[in-house]
Length: 221
Image (cartoon, rainbow, N blue to C red; front, side, top):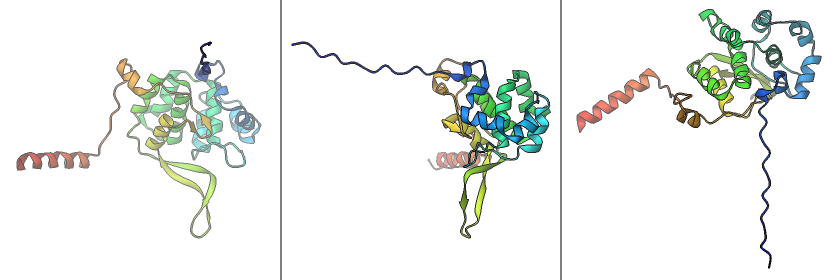
């Protein structure tokens, strides 16, 4: 009697789009075509470069969002597509983040961090994002579909925070209608010495409470 052989289905190889030449392909084709057809892109973004895009972001990007329920792209996702088309150098990206030490434009920071998450390798993403783990600035986030309050009034926006946005970029598969590339697990990068272990920040008052409790326990013992 012949032995039965078990055939295992070969798993498809993951294609990391961060290595493609045209980074704008990181945006899905349907959204990308709608952005190119939008009036905002043709009027404000079509001829911009790394320098002239900054006034557009500061004047027109006032909330974080992808596309709405009808499929209309927001200025936020249109600006991220333009950044992917421009592919700024790392020196310019650092200027976007630092903003000459003023850190005045929080949506420029959010756009730059999303660009870094889409393009940069995993170890650089972790190292850069760790610097903003204590950034608690408020962000206005537009809902894809409006919610209704007790008075049946539509609510189109919700309040978020920069550290929550960064956590979504690290943990979620899709943010603002963009599929994020896979990240190498942090633990494996820590074992290879490329990334420092994650730090969990505790408020000073909570830390003082923990110290006082530990001191009282030691005195009682």
